[in-house]
Image 1 (cartoon, rainbow over the protein chains, first blue to last red):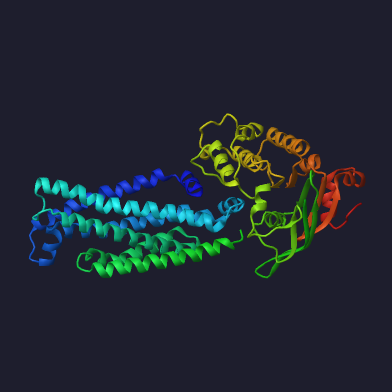
Image 2: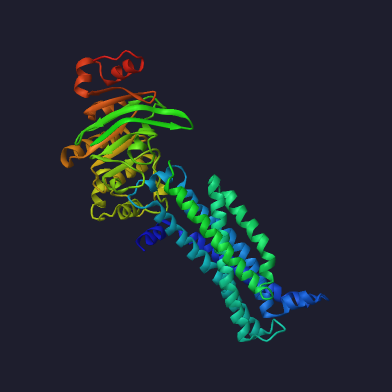
Length: 235
Length: 238
């Protein structure tokens, strides 16, 4: 706990909170645009279902949120994990009488807490704001029911796990060359591969759920590997 | 305090340090001299546990230094290469974090900032510090937890002449009043001449000469600079 509080003190988290808020605002705006799509007129029944129901709109918002938060997570992961093990930053960290692996894991905990919270707030929080206003002003040709909120909550939790897994995997990839661009690009590519599934989360929940577990486990295993590398690193 | 015994260090098959032997006694200042690329920073990193020797041993207070067992770092204050800080935080906050990692009380922060001349920086973030101020803060960080040994790689880089003199007085007082041991390198040989009890001259990864300053003065009245150049050109005196 003490190491975690030290990591929090070192992190200039305000800028990332601002970025998270920007994602929330953009996602919310996008959600209103999704609700507006059916009024453009389309014969495609899939599009009608996707954009005319609260659950469909929540799924679309979740998918976009997945990509946006993954990019933010990778940028933050680079700055607060990978960069700390480059050059003079590593010298500073390695001259402390504390376990190197312990420090890695505290950084990862902080990153995952932030990423999970951001994903949850941006997807579920955004949906709640939209749902309440949509219900008040009849923006959607659908009745808001408790099941829609429950589904959005369930999906947000799974998407949070998925984003965490993507963050961890991209972190390990970026750690190979300690490169910011490699970290961010790998996060974007991974999230692009998964975004189609995420839009279909209501119909393919089991698949998305198991995939998120697998990706999270892979991410954790890669993090174990990274921690071991840090343990034996020479600077 | 520090015994480096037959240390070899290779990087990608290239020998950077070969059969390095040096001894730093407790309560003294040891100046490690050498040209660029001689292996001074590598030596400091080995002593700080940042690198592992390819062969040989390094002992600190009788215990062999191992990267995996880091408790010895609590007794070391290290300043190697360009110091880095948490730039959005103030000098005091940086030291608080340092002391928290060291498991020490934060009570002496004011004194540490005072002795390096940064007592008036207040809440100013380190990002707004000059190079000299950052160097002073790095020294404050190295001494703030009252270590037994200071490992200082060119600590007066970027300091003005007054700052250099202040640091000289600080290092001498740390040894005299707190029985600290200092291992220091600098290209400003006059500074080493003022403070060191013993010097070691590193040539091509090997200590070509290890001698007390009194012997240097006896054998080379012109001073440490001439003595150093004599060693480098292969004509060792004394």
